[in-house]
Figure (cartoon, rainbow, N blue to C red):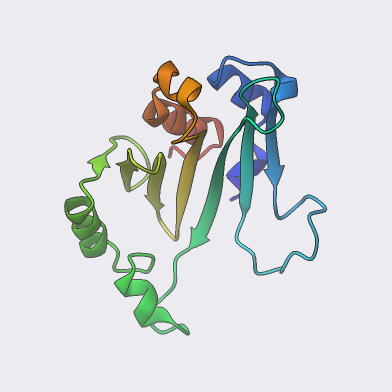
Length: 163
C-alpha cells in the first residue's frame, strides 16, 4: 500500500487552512526526482507554503516500511529496532523511554511523538511513519498552535492508513 497515492494537495490544503497552490504532495517513488532505487519504500514529502516568502515552507513526510522477518538478511537488527515480526516489546519500550502517547483506533498500534510531530502506526506486515508538516523554529507557525497530532491522524485516515 502507498498512502501517498491517496493523499492529495487538496487534502493537505484543507488540513492547513490554505490554498491548493500552497500545498504539495511529492511521491518520491513516482515523481521524476532522480534515480529512484526500486527497493525504495513508498514515501512522499509534504510541503505547505506558510506565507508569500518562498523560504517559509513547512515540511513533513510519509513513509511505509515492510516488516522484516527474523530469517531475512538483517532480520535480527530489524527485530531489535521494532520493525520486524516481534515488534510489541520494542514499541512498548520506545513508548516508555521517549514518553510517547498511544493513539487509539489506528492499525495494530499507534504512537505519537509530539516533539517530532511524528505518528508511527503498526500494521500487519508493515509500519507507517507520518510527520505532520511544521517548523520548530518558525515563530509565526508556533503562534498558530496547530494540533499536529490531529493533523497526522487525519493524514493517516485520508491516506487509507487507519485500518
